[in-house]
Every structure is written in structure tokens, then in C-alpha cells.
Amino acid sequence: MRLVLVGPPGAGKGTQAQFIAEHAAIPKISTGDIFRANVSQGTPLGVQAKAFMDRGDLVPDDVTIEMVRMRLLEDDAAGGFLLDGFPRTVPQAEVLDVMLRDNGTRLDVVLELVVDDDEVIRRLSGRRTCRTCNRIWHVDFDPPEQAGVCDVDGGELFQRDDDKAETIANRLAVYAESTAPLVAYYASRGVLIGIDATGPVDDVTERAIDALRPARSAEQAGRASGSGDRAGDDAGDGEPARP
Image 1: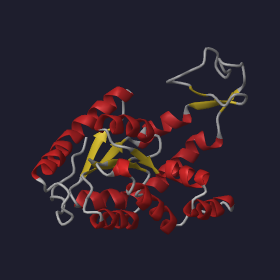
Image 2: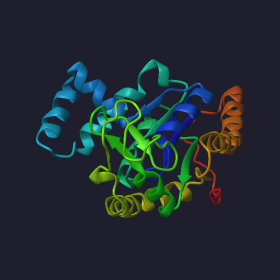
Image 3: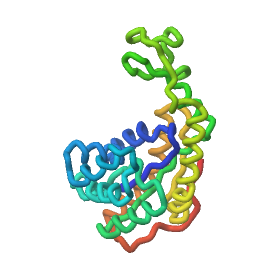
Image 4: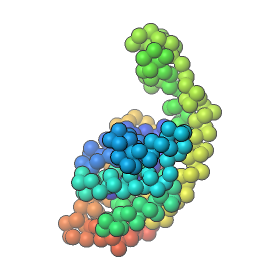
């Protein structure tokens, strides 16, 4: 299965990506992991990316896209993958389509984790970080025994600037502006599935696996018939499933 995972900050993409990838027996590929691997290994792409990051600049699309392309050519991604953090824009999605078509494959599904803004703000703004050990607590989901004090070392807990409600609200606005066209793009291609990503982690994982089951069955049936990876096959039309 070839899968892209999308969702706002605080939707739990990292957690769900790991569980879904393990269930489907495919590698989880995140742009963060790709950047770190290329930089740490000193690859030509990593050297280029590091130069931009050291200046505080965004890494250009062409560098990011080439890193993704090279990663998808690795052996472990031949039978499928889960992409987390790419694509983020419609132009990137179009490049990914061409990239996969050139390899004789296509996306099977794009899974959107749907969480309303109030829930995201509650999740992220409740985080508190220890000044001493950097351990993260949560006022609702993982509170320390004594408010404002770390259970591990007694350090003071504080709220980071990027965990403040107004900062999170701004991040959500930026996400909506940049990602809404991407969601619409994949919906128009009939490969978008949306699930409710609120509630316990295990419940969200179960919803995700249930939602992906038809696409995975279709992909496996296509492989069995020898037609599952035909680059010329377009995704079917239809409305995306929504929670």
C-alpha cells in the first residue's frame, strides 16, 4: 500500500503513522527523518539542506523533492510506504504523482486525520515542559503529582511559547490555508479518506485501519491480478469518506 497521511498539528500523525505502518508492514517515511538522515550522512543533498537550515532559511522544494524521490527508490519502499509530512502543497502532490508514475506505481489512499481546532488547542496548549530535564507533561492527559513541578527531578514546569493558545491558533490558520487545496486535490482524485482523530489513541488507530481496509484489499487484489501498479490507471471518481 502506498499511503499519504495528512492532518493538522496536534492530530497525532506521528503516533498514528507508526502504528499504521507497522500494521501494513510498510516503512514510515517522514520528511524530518529524511532530512536528518541526509544531513547526518553528509550526502550532497544533506549538505545543501544544511546550508539553508544553518541560515534559518526554508529548504527549497527541489531539494526536498529529490530527497523524497531517492528515499522512495530504496528497496524497503518497493512494496509500499507511508509518507508523513510530504506532500504539503498541490505542486508537491503533482510532482509526487509524476514521480510514482515514472516508477510504474500510484498512490492508493490519502488518509486525513480530522480534528477540530478547539481539540488541537486543548491538546497542545496543555503541554508543560520541565526546565531541568525537558520531560513533557500535560495538565489533562499526563499531569504531574504536584502542579507545576516535575515528578522526575522536581524541576519547574513551564509552557513553551509555541505551546501557547495564540501560537497554536496561528499555526492552524497557516495549515488550513496551505493544506485545504491539497485535501481538495486528493478528494477530486477519489483517494481521500477522512477519519475522526479524537478520542483514545487505540480507538483512532482502529478507525484508521478499518478505513484503510477496502483500499488495502483492492491493492492486494490488483497485485494478484497483475494490474495493481499500472501507471496509467487513474483513481476512481467519488466523494471522499468523511467522519
